[in-house]
Image (tube, rainbow, N blue to C red; front, side):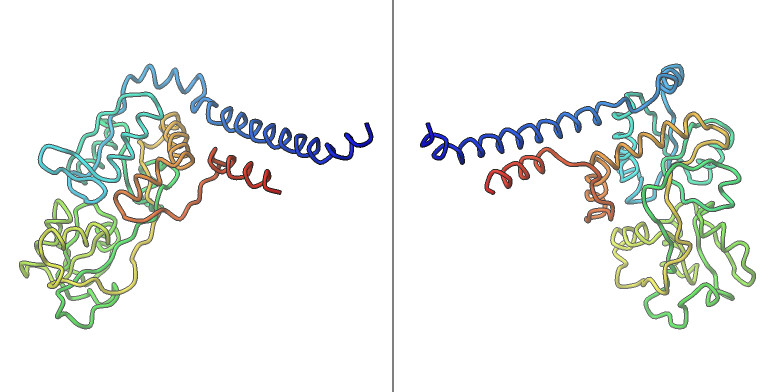
Length: 296
């Protein structure tokens, strides 16, 4: 009996350790399962969404890579984000691409429920309510490659500057004196004004600008200059006072960022992972932890 105790003591201890590790792994897995199955919306929110029937979401008709029409397809980062949001909420979405200034007016008139992507500013916050941000956006100055002496906003005085109607650059620059603003329905058309010599500079979204340069075959003709302009959170926007929808969208966006769907969509359109790190332990991590403990 003494011999069995000394010979099997290590084996018994190992069995106890394995049992504890397995119990820990199962406990963590169950905890993760329970967390993942917490209802996204409260009963009151689910009832509100059910009565609503579907959500009508407006977006820019041509703001690549965020949202744009190509052929008969409406596509882009924001569009994929909205489809994923629809799946999380379990509700139907109707996406309506339109001219940007028209989209803003449609939301103000209550003809749509939300805009799928808008840069936040304090001035805009007086008109709309904004969700939690899902990325940081900014503008830059684009000029002909041979242009010198333009590095900041003050250098635009005395120049013809193209902007998109209703864009954040339009909102800011129209308040500056000495700039001759030329508005265009889309950022691509604003770029075209620059390429045709009808504008001396174009101010717009950096990512959209680089996309348009490549599409127009003008990467060697135009350059981006200066520091980023108007850095601002990029959010969804709802009509002022629509607190019910705002909270529903905030919960859905948080779920997208937590479960990894947001990261996959971001990487698809921007070629890199967002700065946020996963906030939950995945089952592969638990398995790795279990294997490591068994090797002790």
